[in-house]
Image 1 (cartoon, rainbow, N blue to C red):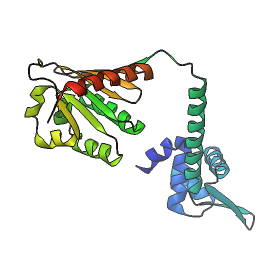
Image 2 (cartoon, rainbow, N blue to C red):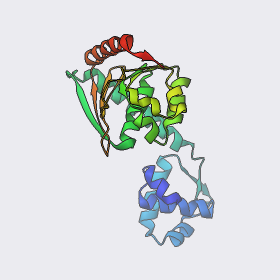
Image 3 (cartoon, rainbow, N blue to C red):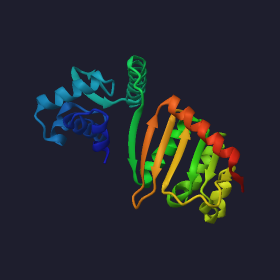
Image 4 (cartoon, one colour):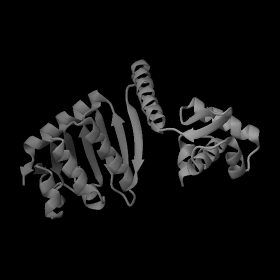
Length: 238
């Protein structure tokens, strides 16, 4: 419904009703608008003045009588662009003044939560490393292959040292990770998988409802990458 969308664009309910009435009537005097909306004339005039101030409605005089009409709604888009720019400037200022913490920890649950983590990895554009991968996530999430394709499209390298049991996963999932090795065959199955990318380290626990603890800290992530390199050297190729 158009009115609902106008309300989301910072119209008041009265402004939206008057605007929609004028949109339907076309250029007109105030009387038909009052009749159309059933509003008191003061409410209609106040709404029209607000819409004129926003450059969404015109007011012209013909033989001493005011006529109102809808203008090009381009100012709505300009306002959104200004708000987006202002939001970006505020975010940049907050980030510049925010005191760094030793580590930021976030908790995600369910497949959707894990997809959010992968989206964060893709957004930052750094290589992704998996330790103890079982690819349960890749086989469970509905958007696995599209997300993995986006990783390739952004030229993000995907490395995994997988549990030996992961060899039973679907062929297309195993092939989606171009740099894949396996832990020794005597490595016991584990529900815990580590994901590392950029400044992020995620401990993913595969229970009935998967839970992930995401840590944001460059030093910790660098240490985990070193741990990955040690495992990589001692692991078996496909």
